[in-house]
Image (cartoon, rainbow, N blue to C red; front, side):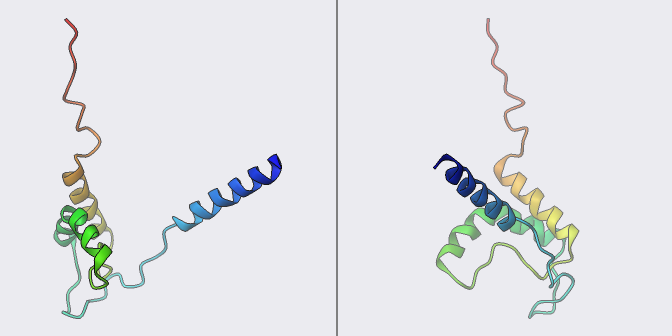
Length: 101
């Protein structure tokens, strides 16, 4: 019984990790319907509005969080910077210190 439980747990962990594996974007550097390719500034904007876009995307099939017609690494960098701007980054609490006196 214990071995079966461990085997099921290990299988679920492997499936979860494989499901998170990235795959190449086949539409990088290909223009969208308007003939445009999203770059750094579009990525930055999409990162900033990502929380709102996510909520809207739950109720609409026409809204996506991430623009697949992008120029690659610069769009990804802008998207991550936008997310960091909204969620405060990793050092948000570093400036605050509690002093015991």
